Every structure is written in structure tokens, then in C-alpha cells.
Image 1 (cartoon, helix red, strand yellow):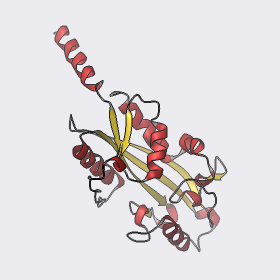
Image 2 (image 1 turned 90 degrees about the vertical axis):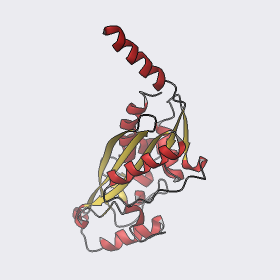
Image 3 (image 1 turned 135 degrees about the horizontal axis):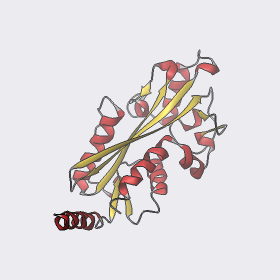
Length: 216
């Protein structure tokens, strides 16, 4: 009995240790840069959807960040055969009752730019005082293993406030407006190394990294 259990564990580890590549399920070069940096010490090749032009983008029509992250990770894993990490991230502003939330990337409409989204957010908050502009970024990361048809989900978040004007040239999305009180900077004023120590995506990816270590 003990031998059979040991043999099963050995075989499972042997399969796990064959992992050579993982996929970041996005075309977004900013996300690829941030996530690749966090995973750089894993002994695997990190690829993105930019390496697979034949794979069609997933329609993100879920009602929650979790639904979208899972849908992307499962779909891209099945399309490529690679263990896939995919995220969905939302900015949740208290004064807007959690908006833009799951619609953060397309807050100003389909095909909008980061500047369009920031402009709409500032307009929505134009009559909100500084003390009432609290918000949080929440990132959901889903990992899907197509060999086992198994998914795992982790979450990271960071609290902050929305400024009345943009500050900083780094980052992307709402980063120039998201002020982190503990650092006295916006996310766009931080270097990649600084951001990857405290950001919502970094915290979620580091949790996912512990899952990936079981395969690497």
C-alpha cells in the first residue's frame, strides 16, 4: 500500500517536472512585461498570445472578474496545449458603487483608449471631494492545466485613491490616477520593480507563482 502510494506520487512528480513552457493569456504587452518579470526566476519559458497569432481572442463577457479570468485561461490552454495563466483586473471606486469594475478596460466604450477611460473616470468623479475618492484595484488570476483539465484561481488587491489629474509616465490603464497612500506615489510614478512589489497584479501573480512552482 505504501509502495503504491509512493509510486503514484513519483509518477505525478515526473509528469509535473516535464513542464517546459507556460502561457500568459494576453496580447497586452504591458501585462506581459509585468508578469514575465515576476516569473523570470522559474525554470520555464514564458510565452504570450503574441506568439500564437492563430489563436482568436476570447470574448470577455463574464459578469465577474473571476468568470473572465477562468474563461480566458481555459480557452487559451486548450488552444495551445500549454498551462495558461490569465488575469482579469478591475478598478472598483467606492463613490461609483464599485464601477467601473468588470468593465474597466472598456469603461468609455468598445475600442476606447486608456486616456478615454481615464477621462471618463475623472468626469464621473468631478463633483467628488478628495476624501471620498477611495478605490481599489482587484486582480483575479486563473491558472488552467489542460493535461489535467484543472483550474485554480487566486486574487490580489491594493487600496488607494483616485486623483483629480494624472501623474507619472510609467504603467498603463488607470495607473496615472491611482494614488497609493503608503508609497505617496501613483502606480504610474513607480518603476516596474516598485510596482511589482505592491500592485494588485503582482500580489495575485505571486500567489499563482506558488502554484506554478509545483510544475516547474
